[in-house]
Amino acid sequence: PEGTGTDIAAALEYLNRVIRRKAVVFLVSDFLSAGYEKALRVASKRHDLVAIPVTDPRELDFPNVGLVELEDAETGEVHLLDTSDPANRQAFAREAARRGLLREKTLRSSKVDPVDIQTNKPYIDPLVRFFKMRAKRFR
Image 1 (tube, rainbow, N blue to C red):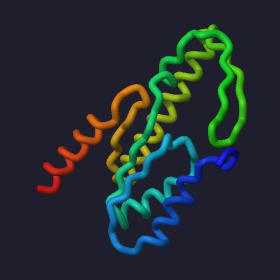
Image 2: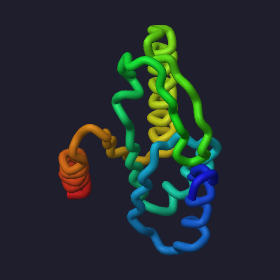
Image 3: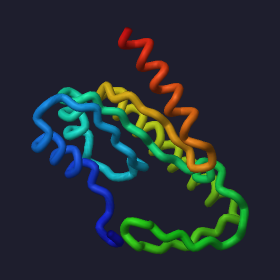
């Protein structure tokens, strides 16, 4: 629903409360929300948790298309970005890279396997690679 935002912690806390037996859980998100680290650790200990971060590569290499109105799909908040300014594009890319590194660190420290999906590529290949890797690991 518009304006509610994503609350990964609430979803994981619900999972931890409701699903008692160990389960394979796929968490599909852009992982842009904050404060989910503790719930992630608990869920990864109870379940076989697989993170599926969905990213748009244009966030790391924003095109020069002049003024762009960006609307947060979850909060409805609107921002105007001047993409003709290289400093704005670089700042946008730096922030996206920082968020990606933080997400990777959080998942790694919680022992959660990621399957990185990009919006500009078919998702089948990363999923097939993941399941092949998992099959080798559990033999």
